[in-house]
Image 1: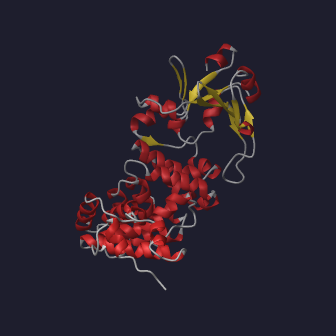
Image 2: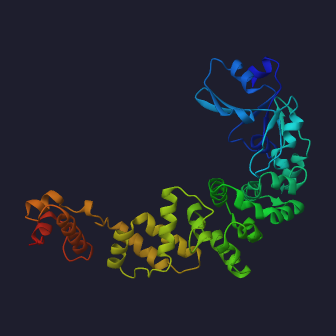
Image 3: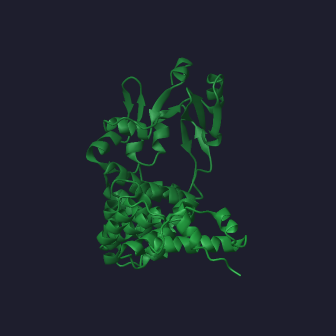
Length: 379
């Protein structure tokens, strides 16, 4: 910022970092806005790496001291004909016009060090009142970009703010536009929402928003939706919460990474499987599903009100005994099998699996001599 101001360009902090400052919090990152155009910024920072993050929209990222700093030119937005992004932008010299295009009042403040706040939409007052309120006409804001509806829910949960009445009404009215939003953007917002301290508070009064995203949410009765919200409230992990919200299957509006998709799919598949009732059964269950998926399954069922205390105690007892649950934990390997006469190929894996089952079932011990003595050589 010092370089830009030294060259005569107006420059200020904007967005979430100013909101955090207004709330007396230490900002997690810093968004910078300036009168300078992208070309002018590149000239100012000619000795530093500059990434064209979104030059069309006036944004570049400057790498200084190994850290990225996103800087955007003051701008006003043109029409949003696709309901997602402006068709065009116009660079301006005035921060007030730039703040007018922003989504919520608490994000529409600017700060010029050392002590000048610009707050044309009373975002500071809304911070003090704990309110999420749109800048200007809320229907117009959501018509420009329907993803702002989900952002309102996320900010409400993150900041533990209420949503102002007209903004809330407009969210429900304009929710029909949400299917126009890319699945990746919807997924990102819902994942952030599920990671908040308690997302259930904003879910409870907003089934209509989710009903626009997926039929499986639209057909839930109010009692069923509130039960789902209760389960989300009881869970602590964001992915478990997302699985609870999505049960019995992932809706098409989400585009998850493979790891998250696998975790959720496992929870949904295991949600009605009988839980182990003794140590041996628990070891087989852990061997089949793995410790992480087993813990996810218990967390999922606990959140839905199931009594998993016995299974949880069994799991802890099993893990405390350092059990052999996988083939690679056996005291023998594939080479030992072929040396013992097992034909190379799939038969080796089948024999190792059989030996593992014997160990898990406490028929033999996981000792090399005992395992080799139990090898069966096929025809």
